[in-house]
Amino acid sequence: MQINRSVRRRLGWQNLWFSLLFALAMGLLAWLSARYTIQADWTTNGRNTLSPVSQMLLTHLDGPIHVTAYARDNPALRDAITRLISRYQRYKPNLTLNFVNPDLLPDRVRELGITLDGELYVEYRGRGEKLRQLGEQALTQALQRLNRQQTTVVRFLAGHGERKPLGAANYDLGTFVRELEKIGIRPYSLDLAVEMRVPAATAALVIAGPQTPLPPGEVAAILEYVKQGGALLWLLEPGDPSGLQSLAAALGVTLLPGTVVDANTSVLGIKNPAFIAVADYGPHPITQSLRSPALLPQAVALEVQPPAGWKAVVLLESQSRSWIETGPLDGTLRFNPDSAERAGPLTVGVALYRPRPGLPAAADPLAVNEQRIVIMGDGDFLSNTYLGNGANLELGLNIIHWLTLDDTPILIVPKAAPDPNLNLSENELALIAAIFLIGLPGALLAGGWLIWFYRQRR
Image (tube, rainbow, N blue to C red; front, side):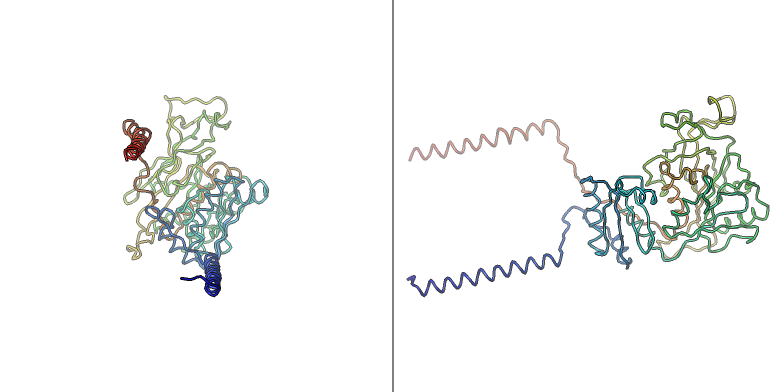
């Protein structure tokens, strides 16, 4: 083919059009990549993809979700939070994430009760909830709780010197109740001398340390409430004066005389031996997320023998070095094995449950059809004074969640690679090293020498 001026002109125009079309195609691809996102999870078991349960929940959340991460300038921590939230943002674009350095906003951190670096605060429809555990299980359950369409009513027994749900005194529960209000739980006081019975719309009844005996009619009303399947949180104290022995007998609970003490708590910086740190949690939904000890000031030990039809789970146990002190709590305390004192570990918190009486089996397999009761040997851990210690607040919120949820908490099976570890013996490691350090280089050298040898013979 002869190349003349006309051919060169046509080739120039062809190259020009090709360059223009190629630039246009690249521009369109860039525009499409900025406008539309395509992501694929090729990991085994889809470890970077939300579970179907979480995806289904996000489809029912029609409003925006705001997540604030109170995390310092730690790249590793912030990257972990970003990766988790981005998995939710793929299915809900109006979920936003903001990072806040807690050192720069101490008043806001103190108002929310933020205590951990990397703690999340999730807001949805005017409600908010703190999240200390980073993971899909915890975040999805928090969104499930914030999505409650119906306000949950929790009633606090009143009229006998109990801790006030809205009180500001050190003894009261005002701070804890404000945390409940943030997640849509409405507190009300209940005076049985006026109402005569527990209202039907009560999700749970709280008995928080009565200081005077209850009249027989009020005791009968509480017993009837429990008999009909009501949920109950009973906060006990040493030497309980409430006169609720019939309730304790109906639940198979015995209060052991004395106060649980631990003389070795001084190593934790606790001067009062009656302030016990509880880190031994039983296997239960209430305690599964707890990662730090709870502080119980002056707790009473419990013995539980659940009646027929009931099941009991120990929630909290004192340390094995603790014991029940039946004498004065001043001076030097020593365990006396010859007295009525009992050595630890001792039960200081228990959960009881049974099929809800009088109701047929639920047609919905996800619906809860249980009556749930929690009995704690101490009520000070939820008071305004001690709520901020250890896992006290998280423990209290978990108790109320377990008592009042009208559906089963979402359970997400952790995803993992089928065999992420490769275990090799020393002989296998030596063989691999010999192959790659000696065998492979030797084979290359031998091949090169053979090629050189045959070329020399030509």
